[in-house]
Image 1: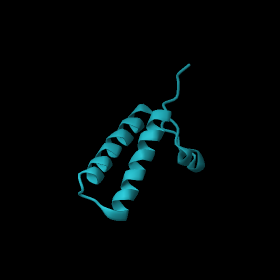
Image 2 (image 1 turned 60 degrees about the horizontal axis):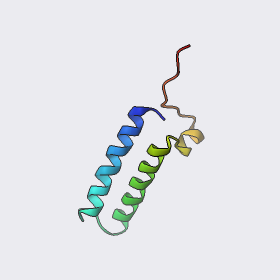
Image 3 (image 1 turned 45 degrees about the horizontal axis):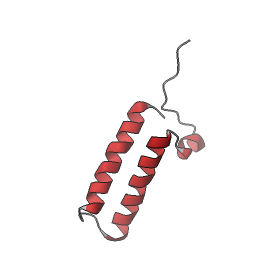
Image 4 (image 1 turned 135 degrees about the vertical axis):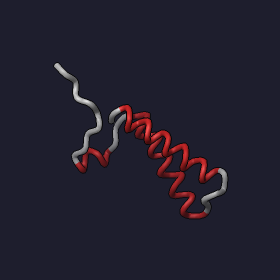
Length: 65
């Protein structure tokens, strides 16, 4: 996972967390958004997204030799 992808995920998780914890989005929708935000944080910290493997995506820049 590339650095830009990680940054976007962390920002999105922050927005989703804000929406949930400030009470703007509540109920089941809010809980789902909070869980998605948690997954975004986790995948950003680990640097691996299982869905990228399934769909064959790669956002990590290749090293020039």
